[in-house]
Image (cartoon, rainbow, N blue to C red):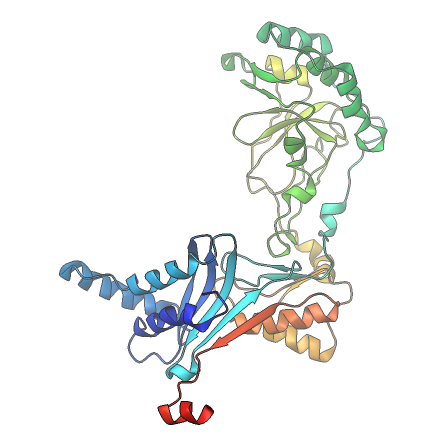
Length: 418
């Protein structure tokens, strides 16, 4: 059997009806099935809570009697379906009506322009493929006249690294030159960074925490593209729904420029917990070229000041540290107009009104369909609105394959068909 045959789904549809709370007219499952697993949500006459309450009561009764739990038949049927799709997940909507003739299974295939979310199979539509919010595209550049701090000292960096890592092998001069050549705007690597990599191209640089130093870090190899790209704007972006309102926090002291991320925050060390020490090649007006910032993996945007130079970080001369605020990105209401030009998050019914009236902004890069994640719209409504938005931009639609229960004919009917 295959997923496009009614017989594959019939045991689950029947179990969905049998497991419904009393007096239910229509029960629905929306979720994904495949790779040997499944997940999704249940609605009974549009209510998600009534089944949970019903199941709690049945589960207590099953525990006393030793019978199978209330979800056993559902799980058995879903397990059999999941085994048919070991290599991919299938988005599906299953509806069991009051009459068997009303039963329907819809197999949904999302095009690349449609993004799913944890609680919403159709979260948003990206109308301009690959587009990012405007704040993710704003570069930073060195401030004219910016210079290294007085504490910057390549010799100190060399001494600390060779003392702590006597067996380290430095990076090849060509590798250091290639890393510098890859920086935007012809920016040069600070001498401290050259000294670090000339002394050790990789390895664990451990310091004495008691002397006020950072405790050390794992040197990020010049060839480690993963860590060097992990905090760039595109890598920090998740979805338009979560990030259209994300902006970098401002540094009150003016040392670090506000940016989602930048290739001019040059990673030099990792703390082993997913966070990166980077040398800042484009400091703010009150910062220094070569100052050290922290890129925190829990922050959605920005960098946090850590030391005025690499030497200061290594020997423990860190002053004026920012308190780490892991909220990372902030939602600036001042950017509301710009966000509305690029992104709107509306209920499907509101999108239909705009589509009918021809008032969908031509500047829109993405359209959200779940303004309230605690009450996501019906999948059928979301698909209908999404397909109209996709058609507006000439993009591939969401495809839905609809399966219904075969008509059961009487013996006379079957003989007549012959």
